[in-house]
Amino acid sequence: MAFNMKSTSAGMLALSAMHLIPSVLAAESSFNKQSGAEVCSSDTPLSCSSSTIEPSCCFNSPGGSFLQTQFWDYDPSTGPTDSWTIHGLWPDNCDGTYEEFCDSSREYSNITAIIEESGNTELLTYMNKYWKDYSGDDESFWEHEWNKHGTCINTIEPSCYTDYKSQEEVVDYLQKTVDLFKTLDTYQALAAADITPSESATYTLDEIHSALSDIHDGFAPYVACDGDNLNEVWYFYYVRGNLITGEFDPAEKLTQSNCPETGIKYLPKSG
Image (tube, rainbow, N blue to C red; front, side):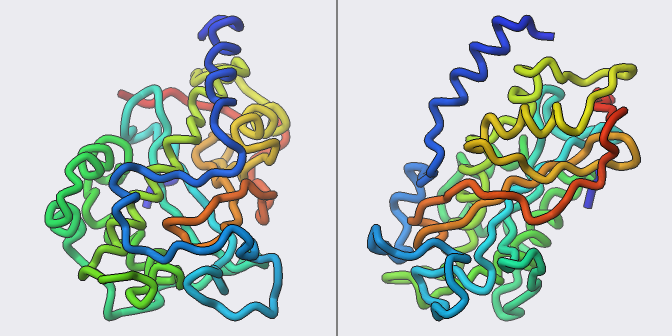
């Protein structure tokens, strides 16, 4: 696991484009529309809205706080130099704790083969570019994310599917992670606020929070640093309904940044 200018007018145009993304996200690729996952009613309660509702295919629990997490790996660098990369999609509990490796019978060591068998070659191509392991072992990284986090999402258990096909929840989980990532262009959001990779420039935590809240319905994500160097962000959501067919509502972060208040570096990728 890694731990990893444009002019003002250009930045504002880019940010305006990002504001076209709805604040309540029901992100579905054309592939996900074929999913047999449970479709829930529009009045389904939001995850984490109650501690008395039983887990079901339409209510994510205990993992009801979902984090779309991203890396900025700069040394060694991974992914495009003008983009952050995917870390994962995590089902944290509503108090910020989490469960892990929840179903050993659905832990897999052949994620690439599972995607290929599904026919979703577009997903695999995208993952090979944007879901990167800093040590070069993408397959093991994807396996880790599914086995540790994906198996803990109760609304994508096989019983929550109509005409369930073996391992289809794995592909659905990976696709949903990618769909969310595509709506959260961290690199461009920072660039729109004149926060760009530099060997010498420094930024404040407030500046970074403000820039990233603009693409997350006003909610600042968790920002992580390796020392003084910016290297990770986590965007928090609650979900109304099933993970695959439901709506994602941006939410307040449940974890406080480990970055300093000032003097944060955003180092260029080493190329």
